[in-house]
Amino acid sequence: MKKRILVAGGTGYIGSHTVVELQNNGYEVIIVDNLSNSRADVVDSIEQITGIRPAFEKVDCLDYEGMDAVFTKYPGIEGIIHFAASKAVGESVEKPLLYYRNNIVSLINILELMPKHGVKGIIFSSSCTVYGQPDVLPVTESAPIKKAESPYGNTKQINEEIIDDTIASGSPIKAIKLRYFNPIGAHPTALIGELPNGVPQNLIPYLTQTAMGIREKLSVFGDDYDTPDGSCIRDYIYVVDLAKAHVIAMNRILDGKQKQASEVFNVGTGRGLSVLELINAFESSTGVKLNYQIAPRRAGDIVKVWADPSYANNELGWKAETSIEDTLRSAWKWQVHLREKGIM
Ligand code: UFG
Figure (cartoon, rainbow, N blue to C red):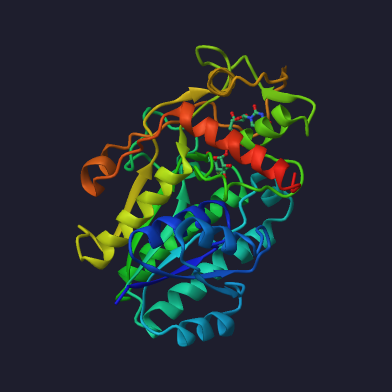
């Protein structure tokens, strides 16, 4: 019998790639998504890639009764991977209550429903945003948590605490919190990828849309930071490598291999790249020229952050494997696919 996993937010960017990897590793997946920031046809694309159609339920994680009914309809769910959250930093500053409600109530509902339905473990999508600007780089899991720069970032910090407090109170569940660095790229088939609503806020979708001619120019936000070329540095991780970390983490929970009931891992490559280095890598790996300009700094940007992923490497046996060139080619292939399909 295949083990059942519920993926909340499974039609979204990281969620869809994770559903593919779960299915490829013999798990049965039930997707729950309210489609607020994704499309229902992602389910078709997942089926095209894996040959297996995941179950799909259009339910909002804020809807306790609706979620309860999903667990009842699919008995024996063993694990849940919780991606369903709002994630735009700027929007969270304008609409804090929306972010606190969406991101926190969803998690509370899930944590309440897990013991009720015998679900053993949860993998939670956290973020390197919890470190703010780290004092020491690369940043390890034991680095101090800095005051959040945005309501979005605060929801990640609060949610990590909610999970730990719940487990400390005696809830029988297990948890792994994955702190993602900057996920980019798309599935090698170009059948799933990142599809932002409106004008992209993140670097890679803005970059590939500019290369496609949808946007006129990419603005590089600042070239006078304290970094070798003056632009900000991030740890860009290929989304498929990130998806695979979830499968390994789920195996670890279900096989009872955890060292503590709630664990946390950095999921990054360990390599920092500046915005200008990334642009160069895009141009050289795809052969596509990019129109860009240096623009003023963006408010709230961290100057530099990259992961020390050695705890995940050693303890999970997971490592980011894909080169930045292959990753950027996959992002470009996805953008070309969107054009061919007439979506963008
Ligand atoms: N950037 C540009 N031009 C753009 C967009 C981005 O130069 O048009 C730069 C940013 O200034 C930054 C880098 O590209 O230096 C990456 O920016 P992103 O917006 O892609 O990513 P962030 O690192 O700002 O944010 C990401 C996630 C957040 C998460 C955060 C944690 O999007 O959800 O990492 O640090 F909170």
